[in-house]
Structure formats: C-alpha cells, structure tokens
Image 1 (tube, helix red, strand yellow):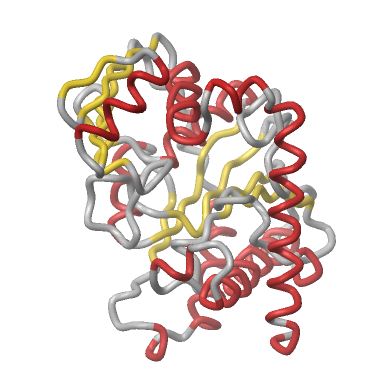
Image 2: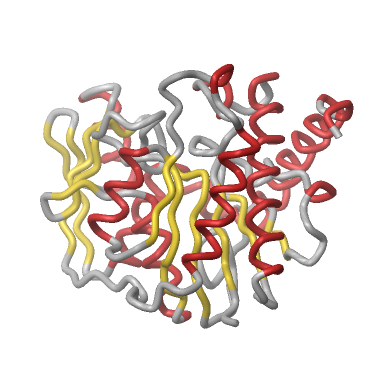
Length: 297
C-alpha cells in the first residue's frame, strides 16, 4: 500500500459550524478542534485497517495546533505547527504517496461555507482567469515529491471546485445547511472514512503540476487602501482594490501569496527565530483546548 499524506483543515470538518468555530481561542473553536480530531482519527484508523502502512497528518488551520494528538491513532505521524524548508509549512513530506485533504473549504470568490483562500482578507483570488483554492496550492507544493491528490472533503461548493481542477479526485462532501443539531456526526464520519479508503484505489490522478506563467488577480476585501498598503510593502502592482502578482512557476506564486498574506519583510528576516515562538503560541492554544474539552473524552 502507498504512503498517505493527509492535510486537515477545520472549516469543512464535522465540528465547525460558524466563523467562531474557526477563530482561535473561542469555545466554538475548542469544540471544532474535537470534531476535526475525531474526523482525522476515523480516517487514519480506516486507512490502517485497509493495509496502509504510513499515515502522516499535517494540521493546516491557523496556528497548526488544532488537533488533539492523544485522541488520534498513535500509528499516525502528526505534523503540528509550521516548518521551514522543503514544502512551505510542512518541511520534508517524504514521498511518493497519496494526498488526502479533509475539512477543507471553498476558495475566495465562491459562496461556499466560510470560503477563503489563504486569508479572509482576500475577497477573490483569480489565477489566469480562474479561481484558485488552497487545495490547488497544497497539491502543487507536494507534486515534486510525487505525491498525488486522490481524496478531498469539504462543503459541496469546495468539493465541486476541487473536482473541476484536480480531476478525477474522489470527493466526499459535508452538508451544513441544516445546522449541527440535525447533523449525525458519527454517521458522516463513518462515511468519510469509508470514502477515504475507496480513494486508495483511485489510480487515475497524477501529481498536480499546472503550467505557468501565472498571472494572479487578488481582490482585497477591505478595498483600495488595503491593496495599496500590501502592494507597496512587497513592490507589487495594484489598481483600486486589486493587486497583481506574476510568477513563472506555481511554487513562486505560492511563496508570493504566503509573503503577502502572512509576512512583512521584517518578519521574513527574523523567521528562523520567530517561527518557534509562533509555534509555542499555537501549542499553548492547543493545551487550552485540551483543558477546555477534557470532559469530552
């Protein structure tokens, strides 16, 4: 059986039902972390039962410390927080293998559940005239390691977008339209795990390597002033609320977006020292979630 690399997010998980559920430090977020953890555990256990020998899980929401390791199958390797070198945020993922993305959200510019790409400050991200999602950026960043996307789970809008660009990826959607009180999380989680196991037989996908050059059009939600500030910071072109980024490769584009969304030139210079401090803050938040949800098992 091939190795499986899982990227897990929170918006499309069984525990997140509103913006507060994705926001650091809220009671809703603590409960969402539990749901996200249960989703990952169900998938990991099902994959091991199916004969997979290696499962690596990268927590890719905010601080990267949303999962509760003691509640996840101990055979799974967890990557918490963020690492430098290799793949942005991940480091060396190993390879080759299969990529499964669970708990994902739709890209900015769609009406999906808590839709965004990189940050909610971006109202719309178009690359070469089409919307781009984090699923595409993650898949492309792992392609040099011969890791190919085979499975995706999120809201119906997110699933449809992923299937259109990462075809023929296997999808499993989560419908949150009726609210949490009418949602059977245990049943959905069982179906999610079964769908992930079926995706092991998806031999039709290939590593995602979109061809450049890339012309990105980034519409800032807060308008012209926000666009002007970011464009000036990084020497980019802008017109009104729109910032333009041009890149030869998808990896150059991804790094440009990371800088624009998360860094300043100063923070980038001190990143070797600053990143461990950021990860410590994420770890502290995780410990609070453990304390806050200790009665939930």
